[in-house]
Length: 242
Image 1 (cartoon, rainbow, N blue to C red):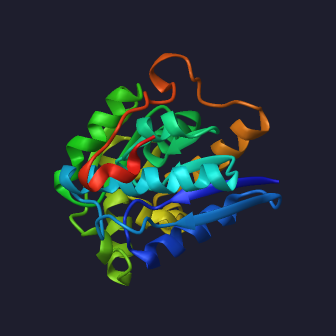
Image 2: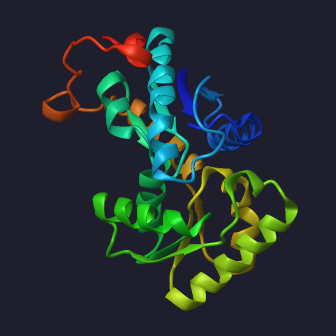
Image 3: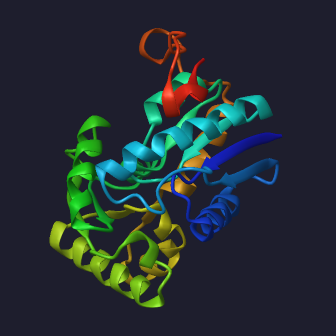
C-alpha cells in the first residue's frame, strides 16, 4: 500500500475535496490518497504574498505526514509553493503540480501552452518553466482572468475551454497544461473540444509520485535537500523549531 498526501495550500475545503477526487480517480487501487488543506493560510493563492504565507501551512502538513508514515506528497497549487522546503523535510518524494504537468506535457508533444487564472500569475508560470527546464517547450501562457474561487461557476469552465482552444491555435501547441489545481476536473471536456491532450498537474503528480515510490526513489539528501540545520525559531514561527 502506498499513501500519498495531496496538500492544497489554500484553505478552500470545497476545492480540496475536488482535488482529492481527481487524484483518487487516477491513483492505483492499492494507493491511499489523503487530500488536505492546512489549518492556516490564504483562502486562495493569487499573488506572491499569498504564496509566501501558504508555505508554513504546507510544511505543517508535511511534518504531520512524516509522523503518519506518508510515502509521498503532492503540493496542489500551480505555483508549487514550498516545494524545496518540503523536500528538505520529507522522507519520500514531494512533487509540485506545475513541475509534474510540464514534465507530462513534454512526453506527449513538442510544445505546450499553459492556461492559468489571473494575468498577474503569468510571470510565475514562466519562472517555473525556466526553472524546470521547459521554457523552450512552453509556447505561451494565457490567463482567463477568473479568480481561483470562481472556477466552481459553470461559466468558468466554458471560458477556460474557449481560451484553451484559442491557445492551441495561436501557439501551435500539441497540448495544454492547466495552470491551477482548481481546474483539475476540466481535462476531459477541454480535450474533446481542442483535440489535444490536456494535462492536470494533480493527476500527473499523483501518478509520478506512485511511480517514484514503486521504484524506491526518494529525494536526494546530499547537499541542498539535506535536512535543514537545527535552530531556534521565535514568535509566530516558534512551533517550527526543529
